[in-house]
Image (cartoon, rainbow, N blue to C red; front, side, top):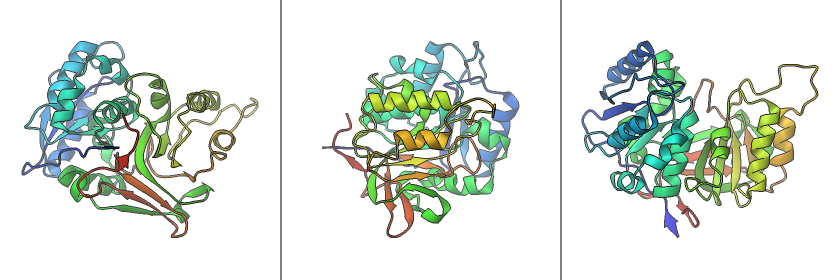
Length: 323
């Protein structure tokens, strides 16, 4: 048995947040606004060198982005490392990162979307949890709604240990398949997750409650992603599935023959023999719930609630087969 590891909780007063750009280029105005938001919440902010660099559709060359990210994740002065934005390019950094050093430092990495690649890699290579949550320039800089802010603040202020459990009534969700389940929280962006299958950076997800979201993926692409997960055996042994936002993923041409997302979810997920929920507020649309990746999720069908536990007894959820 291997126990998923808890990210180091913030110890600074105030906590110090390091901002990095491991994916797409960052706009200075949005970054400045995000920095202001963090400072207004009482955080100290450190900006990674090259955070405004541009190299094609990336925020700099792979080697420099990886070096800056490695420096931030291993810096003992930083309590939290938050991405400025997602986009594209995090998977290009994986072969350049020293995961042993990152695991020893055990930082709290915050982000979502393309950051799913880094968060899955932390699970696979370090057994380390992270936070699927809004990012500095793309959300904080754009004006974070209060519901999302209330979910995010406790993790930034106190880490996984002190963040309270979150209970979401099942009446607020669509129960596709009823039941009870407990498992460790894993997942993120569907297309990014699928792209890592078969690589050394993809964790064994047996015993996980898999949380999935995406943006701008038409049904034929969602079909391809879910088919890949099924064919690779990823869907086998899951404890449950929770679906978040999928904005702009329905086919806009109503005259075009296609499956709907609901039909695809029915074909690939509803027959797994595990609970499946839909409509949780996380992903590429507000409000955005902050998800403690590696924490514990519990689907309580009888009690009518989805429970998210940041940690258990100082550690993250136990998982028998996480590499």
